[in-house]
Image 1 (tube, rainbow, N blue to C red):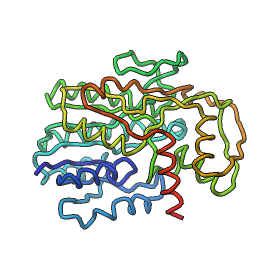
Image 2: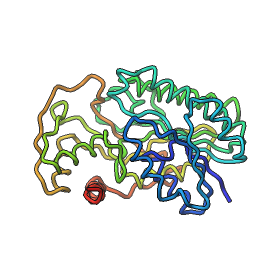
Image 3: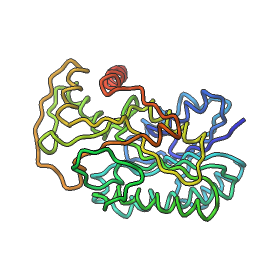
Length: 317
């Protein structure tokens, strides 16, 4: 029976990946420290459904703690790794650059090293569309294009993480796959993320603060499609490889708000503020490589995904 270690397995993406791995019969070791970046009770609820599963094991540990991580991996044996632990968020990273590099770069170094020593066969690591800098030409982002300077410490920390992961693969020979996630949303999404905030405020009749003139665009990716991509990448090691995981569609902020209005059946009250320099004007994933090499095939349009998210959100109330 295959065994997979999932760091950050109590988080939004991680808990969905864990559930999918268990559903296909794998043994899963979940590592998470339940930090307070957002309410730890949310993460506790995320893992509750599989705590009693015979093939699941939860280890509470901080990926930066060398002793705790060595102990966590000591009895694991041969495994595959899905490394999703880290710190997300563009704007918070501006005030906490040291923390973001500590978690996203040095934490990854720690995880890859202890995983290697325990018999890692393949590591999949979470990157982000934030590694791409300012793009205004309207073209989708390709994995093989040179990266510009990131607009935030968060993006820069993910760029650095990718470079280390590539070096790690070259030194050890262990396959490493980096996945650049594009604006992931869906049931269980972190409460600080845009779609979650917009839906919450519209449902509550509160005013939304949005930045720019509504023309900035994002490629929004539904969680089920992301999980499909993670599992496909996990099953297909290719030395060192980077893949974009997105919908291959970019939507303006103004159109996103209108789509949420349609999904909720309610009008949004919006106050527009000046664009912030750390905000990318656009994200747009070229998923040709993922389609060709992984069979990645996103099924959820934004409209369908928003409908699923709103149903989930209302079920939490």
